[in-house]
View 1 (tube, one colour):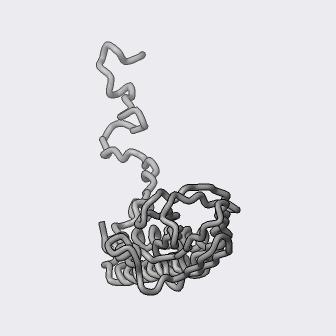
View 2: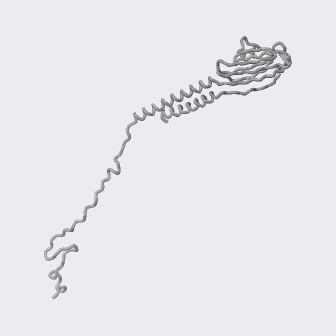
View 3: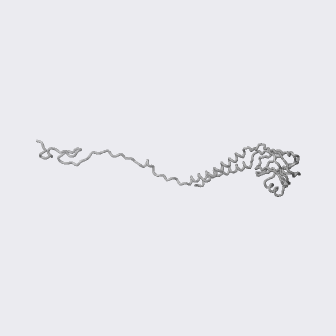
Length: 225
């Protein structure tokens, strides 16, 4: 396989994949309103969480209520912050936090990644029931950026492949052409028949069938009177 064929193949695939990612990322995402009820188990280090993959342009919002009246704390952490939270039970500066027996929350990330919406005990470490409504919506512009970049790379490979194809065509030696069979065959019609020339023979006339034999040439028994 020639190099320009590889470039055209890779470029075409990358362009199609990139455009698909770009188009899909520009379609607004909306989870719809999700209503849930859960229980934070008894214990100081227990919590309840929702995990979301988000990027710039997306928003996680909703509201919560604690029916029993004891306050809870709502926080949003990044993936690295959550690892620290699991190890030490707290983080210094959550991306979002709200405390109370009821309230609202809203969070939009600055970069793409995995984010955790966490509900934890505040002062009461007994089991707590929580009602929550949340909604995730918007466009992930980082995914759109990745799709556009892949499509641009594919277009570049296509342009490179077409240039290589033109250069290969210019450098290729001209094909060796043999004589045109229709032009190299010359037809000569056969010559017209000519009269047969016979040598002169004394004593007889000659015709197409040979010498004519007169009476004087015949044997005696064939001569007439």
